[in-house]
Every structure is written in structure tokens, then in C-alpha cells.
Length: 433
Image 1 (spheres, rainbow, N blue to C red):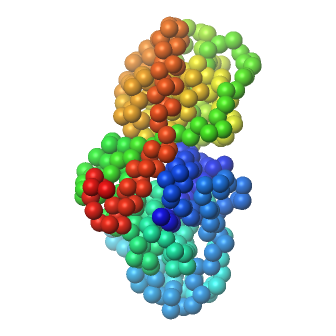
Image 2: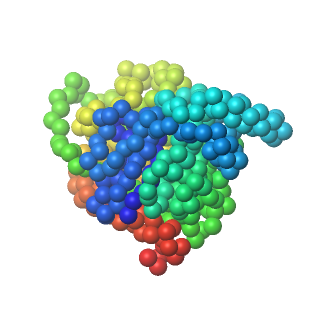
Image 3: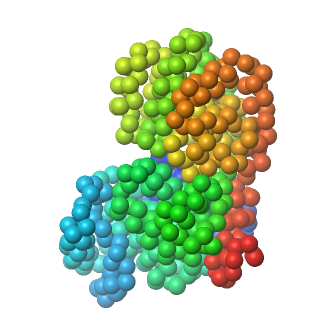
């Protein structure tokens, strides 16, 4: 089986868990006799291609003649919805902007037939423009490659998946790693929501990373429940080895590792830290990551008077993540809405007792992580204190957690995803495959 897969990032250059999940999944699919051509906006050449073939969209010529270009835009002109996510526009102003942008896009692209787009692959101000151009290139790739099914990860690549389906007629599988409701709460970006919804409606099958996300897809996006399948994420431990680190401080270390954004609940971690430090002074708290709430978090730490016991490392990746876990005595993921959450699995694999929010998909598969409501700062502080104060409790969490995560393998997740592919190709119900 051959799969044309669209993603936005791939290790070692990642901004979060999406790239890590794509890496583990493609390796698992290879073991299930699935050949994957993974297309990304900008590849650097140092990606691991032992189990997947990576195609850099920046190396692909989108169109070679005007007629092909015009025909494409007649069929998928919904893709051009503006070059920036903000500010939000009213319905009438939005419609005018869409129409004008469409005209400009056609005019602009007619100048550069046979040219390549130099994608940044970043998440900058021109993100929507890159999403649209990525879809143009996806159509060209779909017209050139032989494959059985299309697989698109996250909303950034849904337009690419739809374009590839329209050109090739092959079935489309949409993979929902997160929704706009996870990222923004009720204050959603309507443009992103509409792209997500159109992708899900256009798909032959929708994969969600948890039942929590599946319920959002069905109830908030209006997607037919029969075509939505939950396949929980896993974690890749190949090449993982214990790291011996020498601590520079005598205190216990409690770690938050993730994007410092609304979705991840950094403010609850900070408030819990202040409560723990009122009980004991032999603890340091580390917030590893970056995001739009970083400055606000720094100001709150200073206002609480805990800055001497609280550290911001910035974004960590690769070996630095493993070193951070090796330094940690407790890992905390207080996410407000977490579709899955791979980092707790990585922490438990590193023998770190873990606390997660009940509002996370990973809570569906973990029994030996302590679970709290994200908003219950008192419960979070109590859980941190308990793991630090009672060695027997911590040791049990480490021992049982390691056994638990060792059973969550990408090979098993890939087996189920292959079944989803077969279901999309045959039109049969997933449970009948």
C-alpha cells in the first residue's frame, strides 16, 4: 500500500508534538507494509528517512501552464481565505476579501509558471499564504505520483489533502491531532475552524487521537460519527537511553514542558508552584517551552515572589528534552484541553512520576499517572507535594508507569491506521475490516 502523506513538520526540526507523532507513525506504518511519501513545506535534508521518503514541497514546480492553473482554481478556490489569521472580519467584509484575494492570487500566479515556491515551513504572519500555496503544490504532486490513499495531518495540510483528492480521485484520510477549540477555547478563529470543518467533511475517514477529540469532531464540527475513528497516539523509544546527569542544585525539580499557551495551562502550574513553595522550600520549578503567554507567565512568577525558585528555559528539543527529564523529580501537564499529549509518555519512559489533567486524551490510556482537573490548583499542589514527600508513592508511579508506556507502541497504532486506510479505499465500515 502506498500513502501520500502531508505534514507541516518532521524531526529534528519541530515546534511541538505533531512532528514527533508523524515520525513515530511513519516508522510504525513501514513495519505494517505501508510505503509513505511524506510531503512537507520545507525539508532541510537531515530528517531520518530510514522508514519514509520525504519530499520537499519547495523543490516541486506547481504548474506548467495557465489552463491547468485556472482549472485548479475553479475547483478549489475556497482555499484562498486571506494571508493572515487576524484581525477577524465580519461576514460581508470577509466575503469581499476572499473574492479580492482570489483574483489577486490567480493574477500573481500566472506570472510564475514553472517556478517553485520557497516555503519557510514556519508558523509566521504569512501562514495562510503558505497553506494555500502548499495546496497548489500538493495538487501537482498528486498529479505526478502513484498512491492508494491520501493522509493529511492537522489543519495546515487539510487544504493540501483536499486538493490532492480532487486531482487524483483517491480517498482522503484526515488526522485530527488538535482542534481550534483545544487551541483557543470558545474564542475560536473562524477561518481556521472553517478549514478544519471543510477538511473533515471532505474526508472519507477522520482519525482522532482520543475519544475526547472524537466527541469534539462529532458534536462541534457536525461530522458523521460513522466515519470518525479513534486511534490513540504512542511514543517512540528507539534510541532512548538513560542519561546520567549531575545536578547543580540540591533541590527537587518539578517540570512543565510544552508550549506556553492557553491550551497547555501554564498559569495553573505557576499558581500550584506558589502553593507548594509555601509548604516547602527545597523545590525548584522549571517551565520549558515558548509561546504567547511566556511574558505574562514571567510577570506572574515575579508578582508571586517565587522567581528565585522558578526557571524558564525556552524551547527544548531532542537530547535537551531527555536531559530535562533526567533532571526532573515530577512532571506536570495541566492542559486545559489536550487532544492526546505525548510528553507524559516520554516523562514516564524516563522514570519521572507524572501528573496530567483529566481534560487530556492521554488520560484515557494511562492508569498510573495522577489525574487532576486542570483548574483545581489545590489538587495539583497536593499531588506535587505527595510525590515529593512520599518516596514509596513516587517509586510505584515510576515502576508502574514504565510498564504501562512500554505497551503503547507506534506499531500497534499504525496497524489500526492501516485498517482505516483499507476502510477508506473499500468504503466498508472500519469495524468490518
